[in-house]
Length: 334
Image (cartoon, rainbow, N blue to C red; front, top):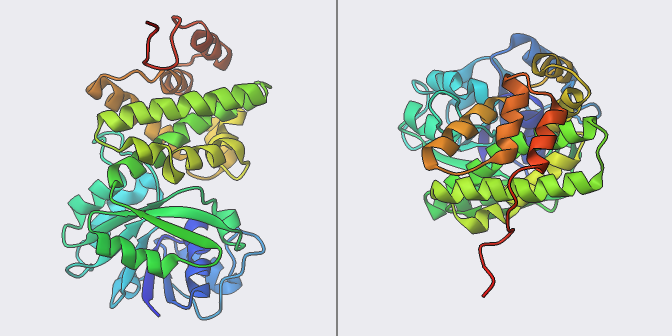
């Protein structure tokens, strides 16, 4: 049995609390939001996960030191826009060599840093790992089977986290490609916005399949230029996570995209979804990275045009369809 502190009491942190408690571990869940903690103490159920019960012996607290002290593992489940400010709070209370596994996805807009890079910068005494893959909280909390990946710079840390999370409904692979995993997990949210926009416009399965396929091509193009491994983008944290995020109504990015396709502004769509839409925060960062590394991201570029520059979704689709003629692969005819 391990002692685990979960930093972040949203739907994903709560679902992982259920999973890890079912694995026999001792769980303490922290949130900065007092009303969220009171809700969990009173109901042992998160409002975003109706019907998913959190065990009576799971501890809920607003005291960060209580959640961190003497823990074998910390799970960082804070939405990407709040990662840095939470990491700053962690720095003075996290002991030397504390293992932290980050389970959120995103790229910081103004620094272009991944979330693990932010944690390493703000909590330099910690050993930082990441976990990613097709894993909607609504399904993990109910114990529906899925498969994910833990990435770490040291194999023994990846294996340690793998053993803690592994169960008959939660299969865990390990990988050294932390950068590739994080880029896949972040950029797929932007493509999922595009998939949702297409749904909102009333387009069909052909459109969705094309967006997923060309979307992973864009993600891999940028990711490999930055040093990620191509194999990662073909795996669970690349195409696997992209498929589930583009296809599922659990996806807040797809839901926001649907609303935008129906004519909502980006701001109104985010209010309607009423959860952090990570793809909105990663979209600008993706374009800045594309410019820095000299790669073309036509789908992600058009998402940015719709989100931030007032372009109509219909015009964005037309521009994508009428781009210069291309070949699909690099091989040429003899």
